[in-house]
Each structure stands twice: as C-alpha cells, then as structure tokens.
Length: 453
Image (tube, rainbow, N blue to C red):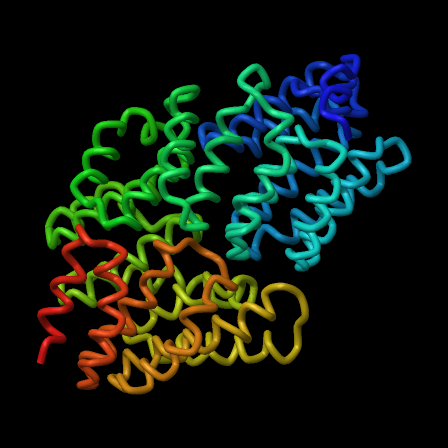
C-alpha cells in the first residue's frame, strides 16, 4: 500500500482513531474499544472489563471479541485459553458482516487459540501489509513475538509498519516503545536507548518504554545507572500499573548485582511478591528472583515454599501449555524440594512432546524439557549433569521465549554448576563472556573470584 494513499483515505464512522476500518458503527462501543486498547498498551486499567462493556452494548462487535481473545491469550496461561477460543468462535459467527481486516484478524486469532503461535504471528504480519496502523494487531503480535523468543520480529515487525506512523497518530509513543524493546533484544543498545527515550518524551508514563531502556542498562552492566533510572521514574511506571511488578523485578536485579540481598528481599516482599499472585507472569518473576538469590547463597526462608505451593496448585491445569512457565515451575519445585511435583512436571512435558503439535511442543522438546532436567539435576547435586544439559541448549534457549535478561539465569546456573563440579576453566570460559558484555557489573567479578582456582 502506498503510504501517501493510506494517509489520504477518507475517514468515516467505520474507522478507528488511526483510520483503520471497523465494521461496527456504534460509537459507544468504538470508544470503549479505544479505551481498552490504550489499557492493553499501557497496562493501566482493566482492558478485559472495558471490552466486556463494549460487547454488552454491541454483541456483534467482532473486533471486541477478537481483542477479548487476545487479552486472554497474552496472559500465557492455559486456564484462559478455553475462554479465548470461545471469543474467537463468537467472531467467526459474525464473519458474514466482517470487513477484510476483521476477517484477517479472525484468522490470526484462530491460529493463536489453537496453539500455532508461529502461524498466528505470520497471519498478523500478513494483514499489517494492508493495515499498518492496526495497533491491536501490532501489540498482540509483539507480545507473542516475546513469548516465542523471536527477537528479529520484536524489532522488524514494528520497523515494517513504522513509516505509516508519526507523532500525530494516536498511540505512536507505544509503537516506539515496542521498537525500542525489539532493538534491545537484537543487541542494538544505543539505538534501543535512544528510541525508548524518544517514546518517553512523548508519553512519560509508558512502562514498556521504561522497561526497554532498563533492559539496555541491564545488558550493558550499568548497574548504578539502572537503579537511578528506575527509582527516579517510579511515579511514571509504578502506580496502578499491572506491569509494575516486572520493573520492580529489574530493580531487584540491579541490587542483586550489587550484592545488596537485604534490598532485594525487601523489594521481593513489598513489590514483587507481597502476596501469592493470581497471574503466572508475576509468579515467574518471583521464582526466578528466588533462584538467583539461591545461587548467591542468600537465605530466603519460607518464600520458596509459598511460591512452590502456588505452582503446585496450577500444575494439573497449566503444565504443557507454555514451556517457559514450566521451566519456572521446575525451579520452584527444586528450591522447595517438591520431588513429587517435579516428577509430574517432567512426565507432563514428555507427554507434550509425544502427543501434541503446535508451537509449545517444539519449545518443550528443544528447550523446556532439557532445561527442566538440568534444574532437577541441580537440586539433586548432580552438577556435571547440569553443565552437560544446559550447555547444548543455552544458545538456542530463545526458542522458548523470554528476554536476554530472563534467560541469563541459564548462564548463571551453568556457571554455578561448573564451579560446584570443579570445572573451573569452563566456569571461567562463560564468566569471561559475562564480564566483557557487562564490564561494570559486580556479579561476574564475584563469580570469577570463586572460579579462580
């Protein structure tokens, strides 16, 4: 599509705020959709409740049903997948009155709820050729790129539509924030920081853009600067924001690098895990922080038992849905010595590989299962096995999602396994990588002192 022609398209009641066609003509429902979309982008408010209000006013609002499905699926939890599939079915029943954009979105959403996340993201991308200002499609595909560990498309998907966006298009700052995170995950740190700061100049309270710049500082080992960055902007990203727990997690990582375990535990108790969380995303961060503290020999008390119990309650429902979550469940079970649940998780993942298809079956086979076996070996003090299991998988672990910062736990565990099994040269080999990439970090230096024998 020619960009000038796109910008000259006449506006009508059947377009959203960015000039993208919508079959619904009920203005109240469209207004609620716009509110829900901003809530989706900012993590402020309850977009699911908002879009439910829109659907009560306009039950035939196909875009509302599709947004509802996306909101549920991007929680990364199986318990919401059935409800998401029902929303897609509602959209399918309305296809006779849908426009081409909505038909394309329905196809992408259907692939998503059926578990083929790769095909879903490809379908979202195909429709963005004709509708490059579809903020809903961009946001959903961006999150699914993250869950799939697709760094290239975290950057490139946004880059492909960027010429159609500008500061006078609603939501432009959030597009820049997504681009910043994609640039960071592609190791383009100066460009990522510049883009993230541009996004924040337009919208200072964009928690995702704050997060993107934070990742840059984490990956470059700019620890003191990272602390100052997050703490000085806390009023922008923390209040009433459902994503705040993750930025608090990043702040805790900075303090962990500084060896300030008391500060890490204080943040854990007050911000990251003040109570057993309802959503897995927050539980993932709590678990990974406890594992890192354990690697450092910090005393965490009963916190690991509380986290493991939360994962245990989800085991029957959630195992085999998303390998990245399964991996964190295994860490919790190992920390709390929950042998029975660890066994059940391994068996369930083996069944996923044998019996299922779709994106998660690949993730589990290639990455999740060997890494869960590695964590199990760590808990059983089989440290040579830890090294032999993580080593071949570490460099392809992006395939099961997460960020560089989140997957850093693999390198840390590999190094610890090498030290504890007496493989000091191997430990030094990986520590060199860490200290060169994070020259101002302290954790790598602590590890190097332990491995220098």
